[in-house]
Image 1 (cartoon, rainbow over the protein chains, first blue to last red):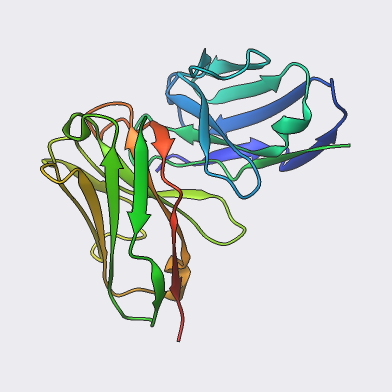
Image 2 (tube, each protein chain N blue to C red):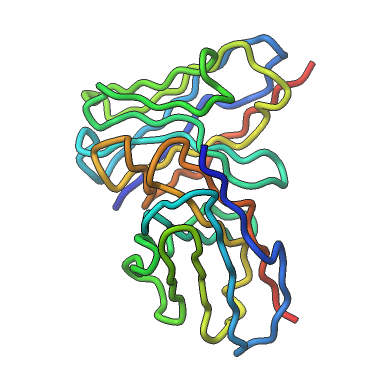
Amino acid sequence: DIQMTQSPSSLSASVGDRVTITCRASQGISNYLAWYQQRPGKVPKLLLYAASTLQSGVPSRFSGSGSGTDFTLTISSLQPEDVATYYCQNYNSAPFTFGPGTKVDIK
Amino acid sequence: EVQLLESGGGLIQPGGSLRLSCAASGFTFSSYAMSWVRQAPGKGLEWVLGISGSGGSTSYADSVKGRFTISRDNSKNTLYLQMNSLRAEDTAVYYCAKGVYSTVSTSLFDHWGQGTLVTVSS
């Protein structure tokens, strides 16, 4: 099975800061990597897929990159509504594992 | 508007059985794979089972293989999860998630239900 890891596990940043989260797959998954946002008490929401394609309606301050085993999610200018836990997901092959999550809050 | 409404959760004793349902609307149900994803209290997301749009293919996580069964009734636009031999570690919110594709071999989720809580405890 493919294992997904994320770093950091949590971070605190100021409004307007650039935030970067890293996701690593235990083996190559090409670009079959998705990012989800889960705000406190809410349902997960798809942010990006194919490593770098923004889902419809998602603000352009979110971006993604990477291929193979190493991926990043970047928030170019952190906003209060971005307080959430972010999960990466391998959707290349079953089991469709999620990373452990990165909790983002405002300093 | 896509809507997914789970039901059937509750408190169940270890070793017991429970069936969850997910009523779907707002899209052509039979054209999309569906999955169940769970989240234990305070923990991360875990994909557990998926089924193709036609219902002809399924995929399971090892943690539930042999105990849980996923099925769908495309005439009723409803997804099911039959859970048997429940364990304390199955305690979680169970989300119904709509796939982007019809096949279960690539499972990316663009819509999620609100979830239903299953608590396994004596």
